[in-house]
Length: 263
Ligand SMILES: [Zn+2]
Image (tube, rainbow, N blue to C red; front, side, top):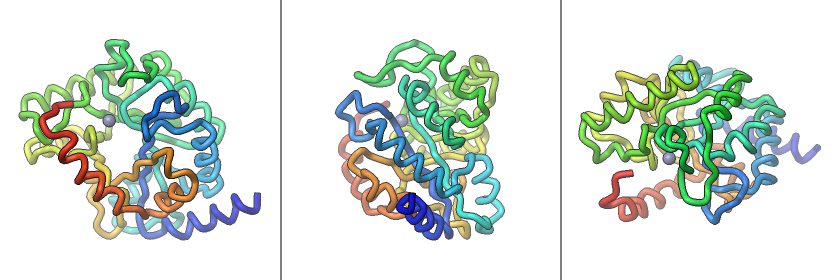
């Protein structure tokens, strides 16, 4: 308990000058994916965050961010990407037990068609997601319909992708998605960015750094992806707004990896 409290105090100190937004993808370690965390590690990370008392909803964090002044207490946001079955089965019960708010950026094509988001992942259902949102802790944002990469899609495709995802989330869950996350964290073309601004209050990329209160852009919201290999040590660095070099290297590699792909 002393260790948890001491680490919590460190976290509170380090997140003071910027908003840190974490990205999780999957929990349960049923695949070899680097972002499919063992449940035990996820629980340990969530318990440590809960002990800091710094986790707020994305809406609350953006209200503070847009005020241009740092909060009285440091704030941190938990987000998930894509929408896989383990989110409702494993992650949400942990969030609910600890009272931690989180935002899921949902790609609506997989959940609507009933197929898993990716090979090896279990499917997320609209019913399970509706249950998850009923506590008021989980909000749902858009991650396009078909997980389309918006730096290379034409304007008509971008508008269609966003409107389909918004329409489905409204229809199936009865809530309007206010926030957006770019698939693969690839910032869209200028035309795509304008289409997003017209529909959402924020848009998230990666960056693995804090959003400084003095000059943050809610339409280029930096997030820090958590990988299994972070363990607790590098997780704490990311919670403190560190590890930006990891993102620089990731973007270099992705430029080659995603060349010629559309989703
Ligand atoms: Zn994604």
